[in-house]
Image (cartoon, rainbow, N blue to C red):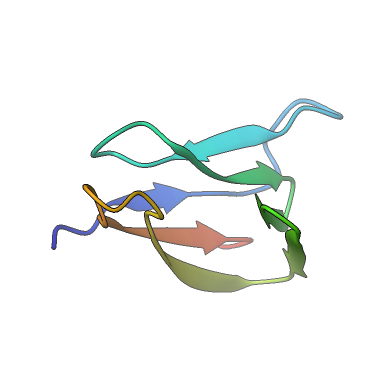
Length: 74
């Protein structure tokens, strides 16, 4: 599977969340607001804050592409 790196940081406009989408099919995977990554799928909701990277596999059965998101770093 191909990896796609998406740089995240604190440069977003106040209150605006950047959408993290699958490079393969365009599905919404997460939202990045400042240094906080928010995931929501069905009844699952998770927020991660700080400096880290996350590997997210697309949930669509026909896609399953891997995306790597770096949060809070350069």
